[in-house]
Length: 259
Ligand code: NAP
Image (cartoon, rainbow, N blue to C red; front, side, top):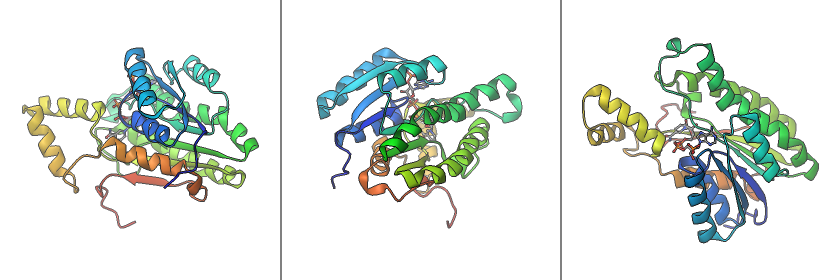
């Protein structure tokens, strides 16, 4: 299926690794020109080179912290008029929400709620003027199903979800859609880091912890980031203009709800 977005321009935040990288790759395979971003320049340049070689699309790499005003300004200077914005950033620290002080809560709000809102505010009017736009926010299964050790994620991502629910309905009449992707467990550096911590706490090997965590999934496996990337590309496609304000859970059926 041709997704009908060849020649479009996308900013993909936090995209040198993991889910952001998979979204970038999937968009590049459809001929979308990319502005990629991460803090670490080496991994970012390596990903940019790999995607360029595989797909031939133009790529600008912006090494910056997307959670800072300067980082976001650098991204917007590199791509002032994106057709597609994929919001993503590192996840907040794991732990019991009662153990975090105000500064840690504010940092999580900044990274996982206010950063996407600031980038949307900076780009959405241009999309409306051009009568076409796609915004994807990578959030989490925690929006539907709280996970005790991800208290910060449970809280701040739900704030973003509420804001998006309203805004998506304001802009869809202008050809601009905003949707959220809610990952379950995808095997990325972040998931591996969480499993390493759990293995240490439980006094078992990483391999045992990984096998247990996989067995706990109703699918019996973790997601492949490319599976999320493909969903992202479809939601950004020409065919998805009537899908707006949705929260797409990609978790191999792990969330146990009927609806
Ligand atoms: P990952 O594999 O650790 O990759 C994170 C990427 O984001 C890296 O490219 C990293 O590069 C970049 N990044 C982190 N902080 C950044 C910042 N402040 N500014 C710019 N780039 C930044 O993580 P992931 O698993 O793909 O997770 C992506 C998001 O999805 C996170 O918010 C995570 O909590 C959420 N999520 C993941 C899962 C899962 O199962 N993997 C499930 C639910 C939700 P640098 O470190 O070099 O900046």
